[in-house]
Length: 257
Length: 257
Image 1: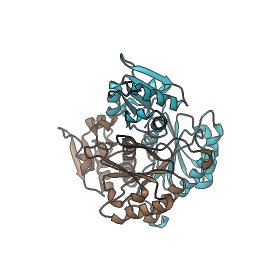
Image 2: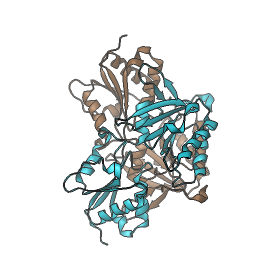
Image 3: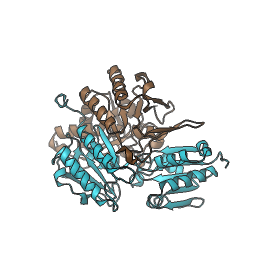
Image 4: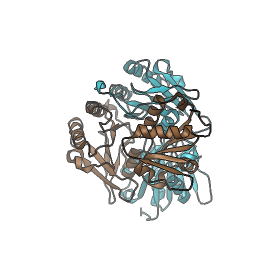
């Protein structure tokens, strides 16, 4: 296969849902693209136009999708791979590089760029206040690609480090029990009073936010469109007439050492 | 003090530097603002215009700056507090809520919003590939507001959890030794072969990227404009004619449990 100098792949983040959170860089790439590749609901966010071919695909075919994008670019096409949120956070960027590394060596000559987006945890945090304002971690709760024992160990260590924690993919039809078990582990490690944010469909008309103590958190409060953020020991709520503000102060007192 | 219904505060993220990464939501808030408040170099990124008052202030006066913004909004002004990157990640959002909580109760009636931005770690990760494509943590290495012992404990626990790690504020003139000590702790915990990204001034004309094994990492490789990302045990490099790609695969094998 020969590589056309004119082709490229941009792995782009569409943000959490609102068009107002799509960066100009991503909009410009979409305007120049000949092909858009991605999971069905994300491709549906791209406005069709003459000269643009849409390639929607189902969930869990990330490597096939990545190979399609690289193959199209090698033919000289200008390809945008769309992800929700940021493509580098539990999304298509790593899948694309896995395919690139395993594929023909000519793919390494391709112009491949990652265009960042507003990732779900930062959009959710912004709507609630600033729960990720101090040290934090991001964990994918799906055990599709890692053993559940690794997830539990990371939850316990993150609690010991007193990180705030942002959880992607808390709950899916395929794994209804995992998130309930994660909440159990967190209650053991952090206690019942630790604050939890359930942020669903952030920045869309269906957005809902709910803040509860861990002792009242229930696995049914999350679905596939929910971002879950568990605060650190310092995370607090400011009550007011409108919606409460959830935030983590910037400082840790000396006696916490 | 009476609160004017027309005033508001938006704590907005300007992204890492490029105008192409400023979201339309943030641009719209700036277009409606009567006042912009923030650290001098961030306020300098806002284009002056008639009817807009700029309030640049020095570093380390975050609470005064937050109080100024809230006070202006209470007078009916439309105030944007600008942060680099995302305001909820080691930036102005938490400082604003600290000031709001400690201030007059009337401040709780104000319209306060946080507008997310592209945070430095995600911009840096995108330029290098996808080093944060699996579970990761974000740690502020500044010990201005927390004891150094807390930082060291978090580094060791994050290494034990096998998170990739993104470090904000790795090095400042006031704390030249801290980052060197952090690298020592990481070498002990992760070994000399672990990959490290030094990403400086990402998305600006001065951008530089450097990937080295931890054994060759030196504190002098980071300054105040540098984002440092240390990979997990699974993070790898794809060598090619152009710049190498640094990424973390999506999966953890069963035998890693």
